[in-house]
Image 1 (cartoon, rainbow, N blue to C red):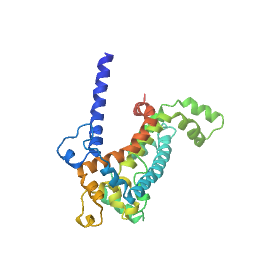
Image 2: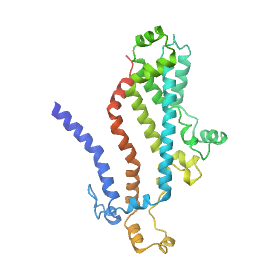
Image 3: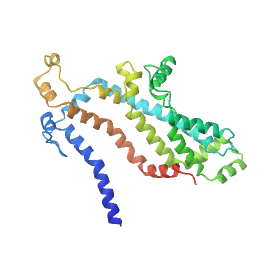
Image 4: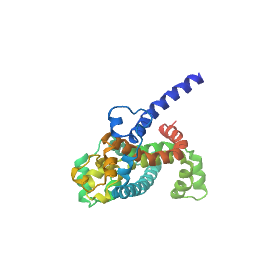
Length: 286
């Protein structure tokens, strides 16, 4: 039985790994080999043209910093508001008398939203356009994360809170010194969700940001193109033209995918050990 399970897991792992290996190989191959479908899991006519063209753009570094800032600010806001909202909602209606109203309100927002145009109007009339706040405030309270953390809080024994009250602790102390330290698995899970959401988001950058220097990385790399403008060739050296011709939209887009994946691949191993525990324990309440 264990052999069957290991074979199934290996098969699932290969299904996830094969597309990544193929994308890496294409990003390091030349345009002709990629276009002819000669690239499988190893680069053909190995070159760094796609990555070099991307990294040589000054805007790349600026957009990378914008995305890092967005993850830090947006992730911090997400975590703070998720904790503050999940804690009271984890209490029984006897303790939190308005719980049913707020729970219905939370569930309603999961099913329905204001839509793109109303959200854009709100952001615009609040004066948030073309700023980092337009990227982080509309998603400040991730409802799914709130429900996940709320169910995790429900699994913490009430006796701990009662003992803290007997010792004179107030709700703020109980939250930050008892609930939060005991919820590392769930907090790591919602933190990973928040980081991935902010890092991978690109569409809001297109509609809320007008200044190129303020574009997040995902929005910026979506706008990059591998086309060679004839007017640029007059100012380029033969080596630069050769490097430009070595890449195509396929190889360039593959390089985009890999660059956008790297930060998440670096962060995930540190949070992976908490991920499954946080999902399972926070998903149900006995």
